[in-house]
Amino acid sequence: MPFVATMLTFVYALLPLGAWAFALRRWQRHRQHQPVLGLVFACILGAFIGIGFVLLNAWLLDGHVPTADAARTIHVCVAAACAIKIADWWTMGRMCRWLGVRADRARRGHGLLLIAFLLQRAFMLTLTLAYVFALLLAYRPRVIDAVTPAARKLTWQQERFTSADDIELSGWFLPAPGRSGGAASSTTVLICHGIGSRKQQQMGLAEFLLGQGYNVMLFDFRGHGASGGNSVSYGLRERFDVLAAARQAKERYPTRARRIVGLGTNTGAAALIMAAVEPGGELIDAVVLVDPFASLDSLVRETADRLLPMGLRQVARWLSLPVASCHAGGWLGSFTPADSVDGIWPRPVLVIHGRGQTFVPPEQEMQVYRRLSWPREQFWPSDNYQKSRATIKAVRSDADLVKSLFRQWMGLSDPTTNDAGVRARMLEFIEESRREPVI
Image 1 (spheres, rainbow, N blue to C red):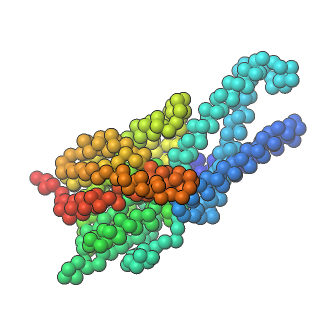
Image 2: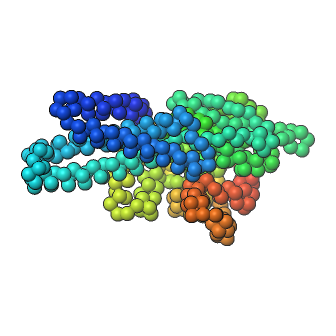
Image 3: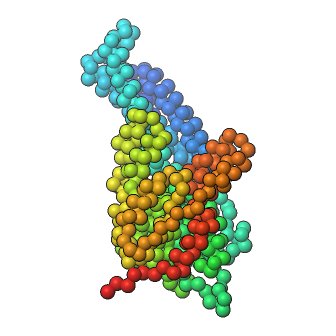
């Protein structure tokens, strides 16, 4: 799968050139201008979609997309439009040949040609929707901002390191002030953000942990913030990012990272689970999972059932997920973190359940908890109905309301970790949890 993802990068780079070479050749040989006009329309449409996708991500995630990433995203959208146009040409020709008709008979109203046209259009609609869903699942422009811990007057160190599959990652190490007596803390909390987030958006939680005397390691997953890459795999390959961050903290700050507690949210929790059971995962001494999901295939199915009409649900699951897997560099349909959680033993695990307001349903969180071996703990946060209603009422326009609801659903605003009860329970776990003795 990583090889397929690499090959797709070259395909996207060369696809527009190949499409134009084909269209111009048809024009020179047969004086057919339809392929050229169709390709012009496809490229313009792809460029507009790419620009809109970049602006939408920057708006929803409160940041800006670097110029290189914006150009790359627009190019991918143009290449995708060219790929769909090539598929349109090829399938129409095959459909006509299969039915034994010729396209030039359209002027005489040939009935079989009309059947070929309708069948081909139905097929292309299905293929296009599956392809678009796949790109939305697996590809995203990185959204960054210039905020650093210095804005909160915190001490920090810039960290640059590389994952096992050669993705450049960006992080910060924030040392806690000395506790009473001047002794530096030997515990570091490794924060693994969720999908669409970045290290800047975890600064509130980091500042809280620093105030309690714990060191913090923040980093951006691949395809997020200042780290490299544009493809995401919902924890499947992000496990290597977690391992690289833990190793960086342990090697660079051995006295402050004698004990590492991993704290992950949604897809960050999935990556943390997989990292903890990988060779080298023994660097992580305890695990806090916030809104973890049990199975990506089940999560896609349940999300599609909630958001998509009948028919498109099957397209998303049976066609989009395999195509997204090719882009992500791993088979997403078989990614089931719940199957691996038992391997975290003998390290303690705390599962913090959400309120059903994000894309991870509570049933999936419970599956993860039930599959854990002892020592395991769980915590249900207090109800925040009134707070959620107050947040919704505070928005100033319908656009702000949509943005607020989307960010809440993604776990980007008003996250579970902002709850006072959740923070108190996390602190208790970080302070008291220890590995089970193994005889």
